[in-house]
Image 1 (cartoon, rainbow, N blue to C red):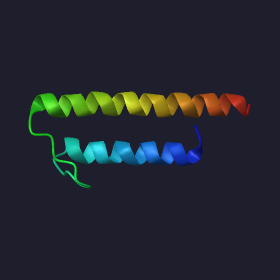
Image 2 (cartoon, rainbow, N blue to C red; image 1 turned 90 degrees about the horizontal axis):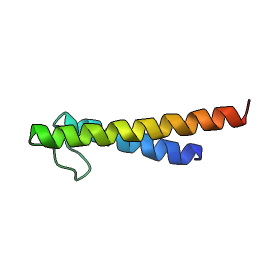
Image 3 (cartoon, helix red, strand yellow; image 1 turned 180 degrees about the vertical axis):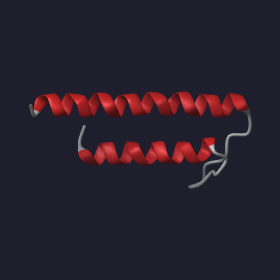
Image 4 (cartoon, rainbow, N blue to C red; image 1 turned 45 degrees about the horizontal axis):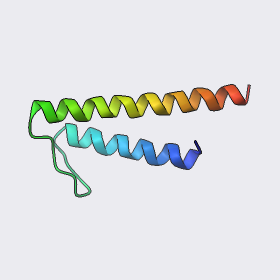
Length: 63
């Protein structure tokens, strides 16, 4: 994963945080129910874990 891809994914994470917090932006609506907020939070956690795994792989490749 390139730095640009990580940046784009990080921006998506920030957008999802805003949705969970009820501050929808960029055409996204706020989560209206606990179930929606939980689904967004779970997706967010998966995305963060993917970013961390990519960063570990990249760091290992340069060690």
